[in-house]
Image (cartoon, one colour):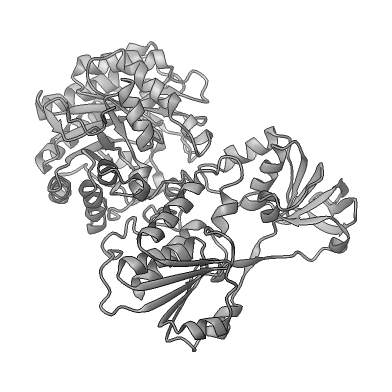
Length: 639
């Protein structure tokens, strides 16, 4: 069967070289005032060079009162046109088309970033808790003009088209959805009235940019988890009205707190989202863009089944900007996989981070300084440890021309990734392990497994550079009587190396402990998770934490935080609850997931005996995949 992904297609008068779209993904790479930065340009330039046909530049606010994020792109004034023009040119010079999404946050705008009170169709609170002021009819018309003026700036800057953001709970969507629009005037009530604002925006934008300039909107095909949220039937009617008003395409997403893109497994096949796109496509004659965790294989299937005309791949292009080019050349094994961890999205809600990052792609947002260039002096490099940090260091060092050997004490590569891929909804991590293994083989990295490394072995090998990525050791908590119980480490449980009884207590309520609890609950075990800290899963990101903990409770897992450990016996764990109550928990097996400590013994012995030594990954400090990959990448660049 011939590939549909590579067929050219068009939106209005805009010719596109293939069917792959990069959807708008907020990056926070702009300046504080909202100007395009070099970081912004490098980011989009890399994705355009990677082969996508259309890049829709992230949500850009049409008025300061609609700003939803810090360091968000601004299109509310003519002074932003020159920078936006340079960005459009950076995309177009690689053969891609450049569009930009026009945005107003409504009640999801932020007082703390804009300094202005939020507005919305109805006086309801946004996610920040701030109650928005209800828009007057005159204010609504003024915002319609803001969208039109912003579209004019986009055209003047050289963009090939504009997308109106009408999804995900922002201002246009707040008018469309009965869950957020409580008005009783011409902009509320029945669907035609609720869609009036969107229709007026489309018509006003077309009036400024001209009928031949591509304009389209992004809408929710359905809202999940809201009472009176948008249904697919309503979305189809909204799409028909948008087409009649002049929209040249419909970009179909989904919204709401129970959006299946967030709720489902990491191996999620986007059937639900694709079915929404298919439903909308049956209602309109203009092209339809499908989005939602679409993998290359799923994208091909969606197009072949006629469910959409374009597929939008967002997080996949963050993980690997060259994804389309690699797909086109049949090199799917070389695509760095997105593991759907949602960490990039979580960065948008962090006060400690400016600019999204990626767990698997250390170069995201740092494309200029992370370019892999040939080394000036080639070296004999030894990497000790075959986890993510070690494999990434070996990969980058080998790409730069160094002669690399990797020693791993275990029988296979992967390190902590092996265990991380076992719990429910985490199997996508296995694709990352496979990708790194494949790259090392292709780069002719010499890999020796089952090798317990000593300082003497390193000295005999005589490397010029050593990268130590030996990981961490499990932390054994100090609890009286622990030696009397049937105790197992979480990693051994996940890999099936130990037998576990029917009543299990997991000591440690962070990610590993909670994931192991879910793994055991799925096997029919009665599981209790305990931790000293006041809250479970503090290290789990904003996007997934609630879903994750709710899932544990639905599966019957008992969560006890804020406890004090009294003692362990052969039959139970005795604790004192945060309320001061002494509690006995029956346990056939105690599973330890109390954290880990860095293993630096080899580093202390080797330091000073090799001219160039790097320490990366968990042996620096136990953290997440992102830090391991980033440190391995940086070590590979420095050698």
